[in-house]
Amino acid sequence: MEGLLSRLKGKVAVITGGCSGIGLGAVEVFVAQGAKVMVGDIDDQAGAALAARFDGSVAYQRCDVMEERQIEALMDAAAARFGGLDIVFNNAGAGGSPNRMEDMTGEAWDFSHNLLLRSVALGIRYAIPHMKARGGGSIINTASIAGTQAGYGPIAYSVAKAGVIHLTRVAAADLARDRIRVNAICPGLILTNIFTPPERVPPGMAGMVKQTMAQSAPDTQPIEKPGLPEDIAHAALFFASEESAFVTGTHLMVDGGLFVGPRNSWDPEMRAERQRLADERLTAFQAAQAE
Image 1 (cartoon, helix red, strand yellow):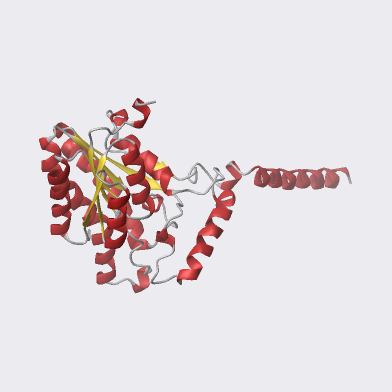
Image 2 (cartoon, rainbow, N blue to C red):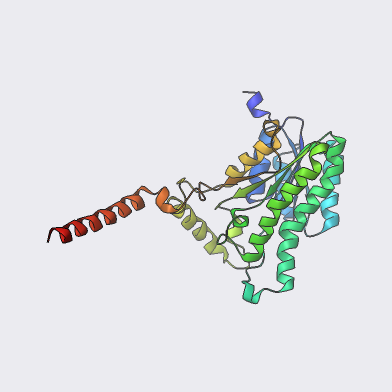
């Protein structure tokens, strides 16, 4: 049992966006597995509470991932506080611009890409010297199913997440001989605040939206349960641990089976309905032939 609960023993991790959602889930899982974690976020109150909750295992430093110097300072702070850096989970992000192509602006495009793609590239860049000093490391990037197919996110967000997937691949190639692995996770529909941004969803409505998403999961994807932050956190744990020592440059779909195929491939009711219609057509054809 000890081995199962210490997969990250002696490891130091940085997790951006670690005060809520997927990032918070990863903090909880990583600490439970023995890691020391430096959390970067812009929610200072939640960050202080998190550091107090995991006294000695978690430290917090304000980091707006739109600011290059703050990303660099976060990596330096982790190494200074805990003696090195082994794992980086570039997770911070939001939905970005909701603009469609017809009303897209350069400002909206740049905002989304700076938040979702540039920040990941810089997170990788400023982790490198610390990981080299440790003889290697693991970098994990939060991409999205929206980066693999249209229809799962705003346009700028989706293109940025596609960029994260390819950045993961080329960075893995570039850093392989430094023994730094780089992988990405593509979450599906996960119950986090990304679907209820406060600037667009009134506070009282956020809970209703998440409840509706949870209830609709069986009609949306093959796995009936809703996606939760811990589902992504456990995928991140795999990439962070030595269990994935032979894995780099890939992206893992953690989507409840959303992309296994069209609904009729996994929904028994839809398959039954298709069969019923086929039987009706056959019966009608046979009746017409008998006349």
